Length: 82
Image (cartoon, rainbow, N blue to C red):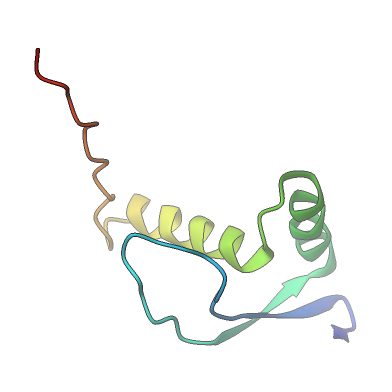
């Protein structure tokens, strides 16, 4: 939905996404400039990442740099014992 030079983006739950930690996601609505929405669509076409997931990743990274959220620690791979 175009609103002049800004475009409305609504993020919703990706019901087909399988995650090791199921999280209930809330719906949030943001207004984005057309160039940002076009960029999100281009990444979706090229990489297959939905705009809602791109937005979650970007917002999470931004909040981590501001010290509001802690960065998720990646688990070490399992080791085989000899």
